[in-house]
Picture 1 (cartoon, helix red, strand yellow):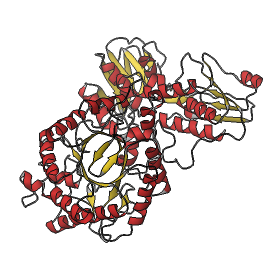
Picture 2 (cartoon, helix red, strand yellow):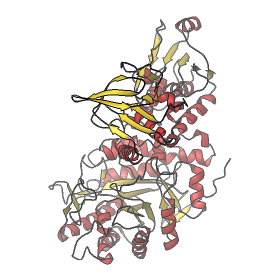
Picture 3 (cartoon, helix red, strand yellow):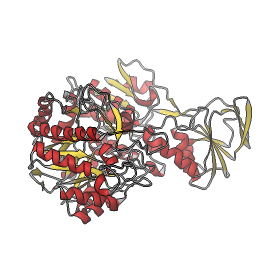
Picture 4 (cartoon, one colour):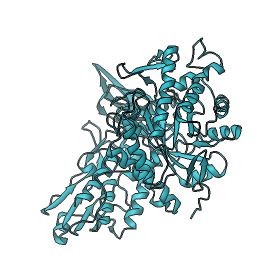
Length: 637
């Protein structure tokens, strides 16, 4: 068992005492209501505070925001109406014996008072990408209001009992644009040379100290590299950090890039801990406490980052969405019990992408429902058969057993995991294995009877008389009704990923959704000439926004031929025939790979009274839906 000697060492940041180095980063959860915390938000944060993190940081809007700003809490600069509600959240965190930090955050939208409209604003009318929003340029008088709002908000945080204030100055938000040589094109005292570009941060810091007190810990979060042509790099971030250090900022919380940056920042393409080198460079240059984050889910790696001097603290967001007890389990050495983030980015797609509340995590079925989904003992102990060991089946087995039921889990194959076994096979999908390994470890250590290589029939169920049957028999590849679909040169994407030998060099993939794109990348990396045929107008329409542009870029860069609007009408030994509009098209193919989605497997018909069907055998979807249904059924039985 690894001994985490550094991750759980206490640290003092000014007047802020932390019991360990783990920070819950501020997130756009969408759980506030009218700028005030809801019981749902408080419960979410309490579970992570009790789960062992060293501090909780939560975002605030500095202007009247209502429900239009990612569900953030509010600190209306024009009155003190929000202080009591902010104090409610601070008291809840202190009840967990954890410090709470309020982050002042405006992203790219702002309004000066409750009678003004929300607008996208910045130092200059500059868009970082061709079709991006062009901000309205702030006037000097408006900049003064913006500065005063930060001071007033920080003062209210202190009055509400917060332990520190952090200013968000990165990833392309308003402050970030002022400090950027790319985005700040002003020619007055707030733009042009470096000193002028730093005027706004300096004025905000001094206003906060004037309003909230010189002894109130003041922290700063900003990008350690903009990853934009014409933006600043690590050297520029160090220079910014030198100014912030001179203004006595007490930690630097390092982000990377902008939302507009053309490289992957948080997706699976980024190696675990892949940006810690940036925080390391800044820390060494400035000798100031530094927080690092992005793509850290392994506590051993987190400890090594601190041990090697790359950072002083570890900021976690998705890791603590996935498992609120990440820190406790890490401290106790229970690494296999950590329900690790699989980097699917569905949380980001819901919140940042769609501006909605977080309702679904692929591995944590309680997200958004922490209040009424705690596991409690069953009123009546039952004998429960669970048929199928995919994510829905294993989660149902886990929860049912924790409630006290006698659970027998059946799997007709030789291994537990269902579709997870296939899903983790592509080289860049190894993290899906985290949820498979976690669930298998749970069911194997919970006194659950496991029967593998066991086909469950209606006769078997009726003979053994369980009190309840949960059918989680999954889905199989859909086979479209196309002439020639059963030719010898045709196979499914699943078969390819399982290791079926590929015939020839030219491969045509029928279906350009997530599965089709994955198998195309898998094949092109083997040196094949790959063509995707998709009947919809776009490739990858079922891929989340945070991943889709990366996937399409990779397909194009690797030379995969992308064809949309194509209806396949036939397959022969040499080609795939299709139509687009009124045109007949021929695509030469040595091998044809069908990636037309999944179809639900037939559930067992039986006469048992209490029967449930969950997961893909109800409707083929994704891991998160399966896990959530398994959890709900486990609570219901």
